[in-house]
Image (cartoon, rainbow, N blue to C red; front, side, top):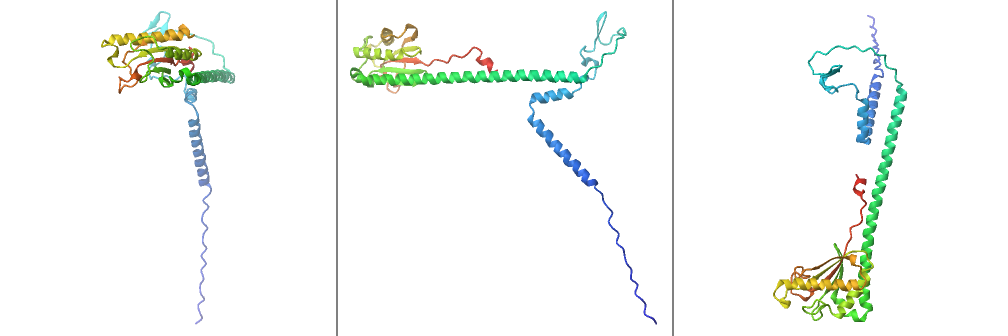
Length: 318
């Protein structure tokens, strides 16, 4: 028996079918759409509310009524004819007007004119905004300069008073009787009594000669400044000058008035005096001990002047 020959079968594997590049196109469209979307988001974030409103008005149809009825129009649902206005629901007369067709518009010219007009308005508004900002900046700079100049003047006046006390031996002993400080109201110069050294004799409205000399020296310094002057007299709560409170009011007012006369006699103009008041013992320098001698004092206040504000200062920021 002859040997059987082996049967060899060759199986040919079929190739996978070609899928094509459709997915690549879809992916490219997706990436392009995402890029356009993020570009749109960036443009929206960079535009101002005015520009957004302008774009909305540009794409909004001009002939679409806000209402679905005829009453949403300009006429409110009524019509005009030769007999006047008619209410909605009446039977109007039919009138046919035959008119020539409108001339075709030059859309390119109209758009060009609109663009030029918008550019002109934008330029004018930009210039006005720049001018307003410059004006506000200049006014604020002037106000700051005025305030800084006043502080420098107060500091210089205080130093001049201290220097005068050092340079004049007859006033050196009064260095502890004068207080010079800058307050929110202005530069305050106070002549206070000390234990054993008073500025005025007890119960008298005219000062000692040394006090008069000190006031004259103060006058030569304060008259160089433009600030208004407020003078007030104060005393302590002790009943040294009588039990009647009216005596303290009269005494402090008389002492303040005597101080005014000395300052004016030393060269301070009359229009610089803002007020002269007597405070009695209502405003002690040391509230915790109103009977201290230091509560008896004369206060000379160089009032802090408000900077001159232009009449249109509030409008220019507006």
